[in-house]
Amino acid sequence: MKRITAVFSFLLCAALLFAGCSHKMADMAETEVYYTSSSSGNSAEYRPEAPMASAAPEASIEAEYDASYGITAGAASDTDLSDRFGGHKVILTYDATLRTDAFDSLLDALTSRVNAAGGYMENTYIDGKKPEVYGEAGRTASLAIRVPAEKADAFFSDVKTLGTLISEHAYTEDVTEHYFDRETRLAVLNTQLDRLRSILVETDNLADVIALETEIARVMLEIESLTGELRRYDALIDYATVNLTVYENSPKQGPVAEETLGDRIKEALADSLYGIGTFFTDALVWFIGALPVFALLALILVPLILIIRAIRRKNARKKVEKQAAMANAAAANYNKENNRS
Image (tube, rainbow, N blue to C red; front, side, top):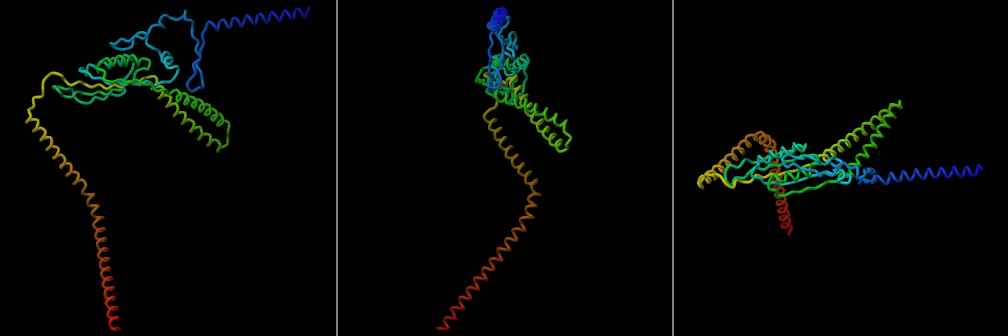
């Protein structure tokens, strides 16, 4: 009887276990799970995907761009941008060159679009002056714009239409490996810092305290350096850079410069004479300003030259005396030989 009861209990437990496993497998079948490995190979991102039947209607709406001012409905989120690059840390950069007849209007429209996109002008440089007569060269603007990365594609697509597009270039830089390498090093350093501080609290030896404080300071400096690098990467990743060069076209119609050939020649000669006068004036000012230096050099060089000349004269005199002595000795030897013969 006991044997029958034990067998029955075993079969009952097996049935309950099988039912539980079947229920769990059914739940797993209803939810698709996938992993996306990071480029560093140290971690994986887990993300369950909800069934399609429960997806919100707004999820299928594509991002719309209002060309009048910027991003509107359905703007891509940070998560969408991360999915676009498979979880990688990517820096976006866009370059474009435009030409326009409405230089000021283009800059005003560009400023409005930057503000609407939540970006800012990082650098603005405008060279030249507004052309007033036919054939006169126009202005050039060099702009560095930072906009949220998730809006960068739509923003770039719109600003290219503000003028005549001459050239464009869009490229990416994958910094995933560098980013996660610094994150790992930062985590290790924070753990090391906590351990050093805990040891510092427990020790009473002065030499150990000094050594621990030195090591803590070194670790903190490295932590600050890595934190700064990660913040710089975050800024470059979160905000894309759009570099624009805008050239203003020369007027195709309008008043022509009223200068005659003679006036232009006179103006060129006047410019040349002015340049020559300026050169000699600058040279005179430089010479007068350098007089103290010349005086100092003279005080050093003149005595040195005199000493060198005196030495040369003395050496020349010695050389002449030596040659004369040698000549006298040769003459004496010659006379002596003649007398013997």
